Length: 325
Ligand code: UT7
Image 1 (cartoon, protein in one colour):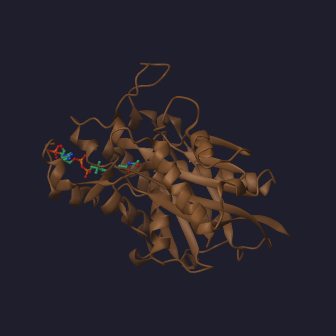
Image 2 (cartoon, rainbow, N blue to C red; image 1 turned 120 degrees about the vertical axis):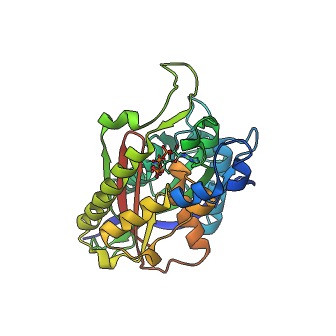
């Protein structure tokens, strides 16, 4: 049966110029390179320059994805942008990207699922393509988490960075089998009973300030490994695929120990995992598309490779997706 599939036809990423090594952080945070490396795997991260906004990062990543696909803004029907650090309360950061790309038509909106945002955006974009509402969707994850870090909280401020990643999904006719290229399954989950494990202590209707990030790291860690492994397995099952079919795992890049422990539970060897956390830190919704685009520019994916993506963030919110390259 002819099935509209959401196939990746281009990807891109952008990292702010400023690189902050662990060692530099020790200048103003009571921490050490050794602690950060051994507990998280992070070695450095990028921070946006003063005045550099989430939309600026997103626009750069989007331009690279368009160039990679050989398309222009006029070829895009929709922009779906995942972020927890928008430029403003409204309008959506996605509409800023839409304007910058010269898209006079179509539509754009933001998705808020924190670090799981890209998986949620991918699922929404796939649904827009599946229902015929869009033929080409620009899916972006973009964050400036450096703006919401508490520099007096060493348990969180050393873990995050800024960046953006983007993919372009295009409707292509598939056969309806899991041999098709494109997104094959998406699993979305959340459990609001865990709101207090990871949140920002400000907001429009509460404090009228942006607030700073608060996290019970050890608790989030435990949920992450368990929930990501289950979601990953569910995504494979939903597409009638087995763990042996996976060519690459592109996980949310929060902590190397979480990445390894999750892959271990699912039964995937380390050499099949794309790891960028050492260079980017945790960039929340940007982390998967960033890792995807970096790996793609290194020529690591071959047509037909099966990719498994999984992410978890504040909410708690988590999910997974399978995608044939
Ligand atoms: O993207 C959303 C998902 N978020 C995550 O996935 C993050 C999940 N959590 C984690 O990645 C880890 O829990 C952390 C990296 C945040 C922490 O690692 P941990 O092994 O769970 O360490 P801990 O919180 O149990 O802290 C161990 C020790 C503590 O000292 P005591 O109480 O043992 O004396 C902390 O005070 O490490 C201390 N510590 C630090 N020391 C130096 C905490 N932060 C730092 C620091 N530098 N930056």
